[in-house]
Length: 371
Image (cartoon, rainbow, N blue to C red):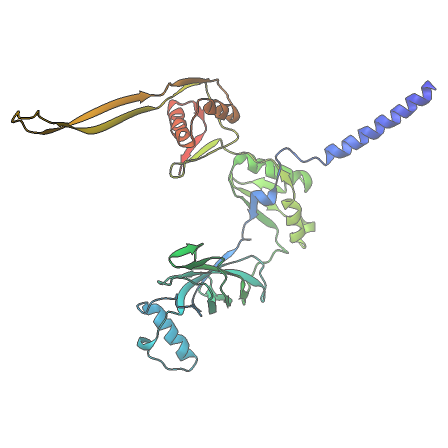
């Protein structure tokens, strides 16, 4: 009986051990991020397009008659259609001149649709209800890559001096059709260059190690803190897309510089995970001075032949809140620092001043960036 029980227990332990090994083999590293979220392939990027167009069909909210470029554009369009007009006789209140912009994604093929944004450049009041006329979209080389046209969608409204959302910038989903492709060949390439979004030597090394571990030793080589050179194995050079997908799916734990970013205009404070402080004592208190001027009227007694005199009196009061002193031990984490500062009742804007003083004292072991 004891022997059978021992064999049964041994089988259960072996099953649990096997399941545990499978679980830990598929477990991702803590805070792991895919390579595709950390970096991009050099040369594979969106391309910006721009064009000048007209939005028509507005309900009297278009450009005023003084907008010369709108008048000229309308006259040119009519002449192109075989109608001769005098631009001085045109009224543009139902039309508006716009700049049309778009991002053409890599590998966009002829006939595919891309989103566009139309922005007023005149003195129109609203683009609501209008239609963008056929607008060529140019690249930086001057060539036309797409044609945009379609009804305007704002998602806002205005009237009677009240406006909800912005009425002078409109988005047209799928409003442009790609007419020219940007050539980009992958198959047959022998190497690739990966560019990190946030350059860091440690992250660069970790990405190269992850790639070499899966693909093969010597495939990835860090060039600097933001660039890696990838040698494509000969067996993958005829299917580079599959090779890139394999690299992009790898998990890497990124490293980052300890940094505190503050925005004095909004009072926003963003503190990185690796921020620490040396031993320091912080005192926090408020000093309030109130100055109040008041007038005193001196009225003479009856039959005293005196004059009424008006004099001023200034009262100065000083109020200082009790200051609290908090000692922050050395190598404190950001969580401990925030809890300590909350304990002495600081506001976000006061936190900015405190961080500046901690940095000035040399106790903040992080970069302080003020934007």
